[in-house]
Image (cartoon, rainbow, N blue to C red):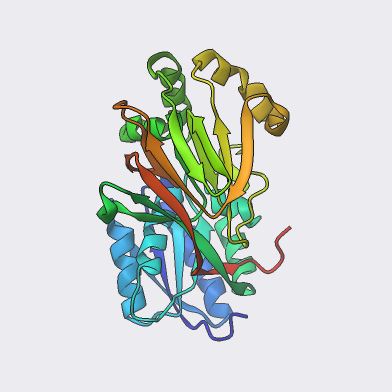
Amino acid sequence: MTFRLRNALLIHNPNAGNGGSGRRRLLDEARRLFAGGGIETDLSETTGPGHATEIAQRAADEGRHLVIACGGDGTLNEIVNGLAAQKNGHRVPLALLPGGTANILAKELALPWDIPSAAEKLVRGTVKEIALGLATPLEQPEKKKYFLSVGGAGPDGMIVYGIDLDLKARLGILAYWWQGARQLFSYNFPRFRVATNEGVIEASLVIVGRTKNYGGPFKITTGADLFEDHFELMALTTQSGLRYLSYLPSLWLGDLRETEGVHFWKAKALVCEPLDKNPIYAQVDGEPLARLPVEFKIIPRALKLLVPSTPS
């Protein structure tokens, strides 16, 4: 159902996933494929953090029919926030061409990693309305952010806050592994309160999933569904770094649900609050958010998404 999509803007982060002249050639081919399907596409490149949000907002103000993102999960998150925050009633659909470190959404939609192949599937795709997560720091509500794939609080938030951006640019997702290994020896895994309609649990980690994929090869919230209006939550209660390490084989083998001390449930909203003065950080889509307390909630029909023609 792309017959009404005629005027698109492709937002490209040239620094994501070691992009360069080779990627530009792939994007030119993708633009030719979109044009063959009747979608004329202009290209706009980002120049730094936050720029993708500004470009997406401008695209909506200009009445574009489609915004296409090419970059990693951080670029995609910026664009989502630019589109979802629009107040003029013009809701611009979003599409993705994979071009970053993790690309959780590409995995979720079974999009090919090859940019022209992804474009071929998208040009015959269908626009669907989906919910987004909204994470609001309760002491700094002006920092609220929408998120498409996954949020969390605890050690994963600390990893995101501690990541070396130069190292990430050189190593990609391996930089997160390096930071995670460092956290095992320096982080004290403080517990915090996680409150939902189902009750309250004290956890050292909570994953707030809108997608089955988490990052890299891992799937954690496998009961989540991008096209349903709820989160799947996963919480760990241990404060032992060695116990965290012991979970890795189960995570790798996909048996985390059968592991003692791992809790899964579904909710449309939750509040994460610190129990003491220990700083605990939250993240959304692999980007830093703020210290707790943070509220996560589902916002139905918050985004229009162009999904590929034949997801598998």
